[in-house]
Length: 210
Image 1 (spheres, one colour):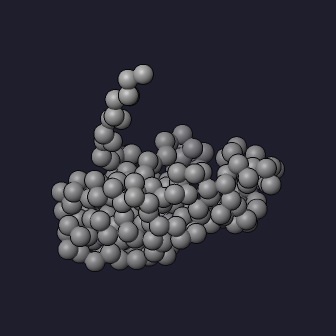
Image 2: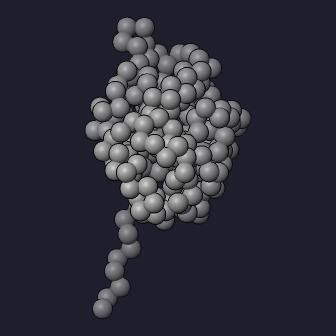
Image 3: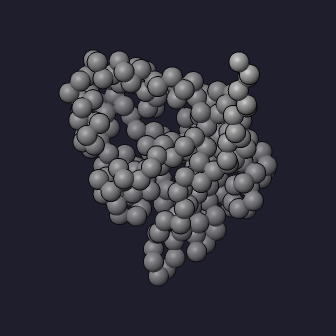
């Protein structure tokens, strides 16, 4: 049985402000570093045999929080990068909607190829799926942790499970530093074991008396 943990990176300033990252190389912010540090011991307890990551900093640095505990190297794979968002990259999503209203409406409706230079979902799924399979082969029968991005994780998982993008739209998005767990055996092939797993955020502090 091979266990594949597909882990979304921690928070960035662009996540926090609703700016389209795509393949722009944006680093983790302080919250993202804290999220990675909180998730790392939980994943280390799974005794991963291999850790692979997108070569973009926000994913690579998330993976590094784990390998500091396990002593393993992070193996980079550019195929694990987020979806390329074409002419939207670097824009606030509200600005993208204003400047590209037709493409934005198509994207919101789930069109897999909405235009504006955005990478088609089929292409995204194929490249991320190939990377996930390659990562799994590095520890056949073991546990592999792959640090990647929200959209990339969704489509890569769909590729391995054989799920159409219309099915994937019904699956909740991964929160920052949460993960999906897939397992593979000779009888069932790849199957979903868990989704959106991660550390529980502490409750907010009590409100100041007024």
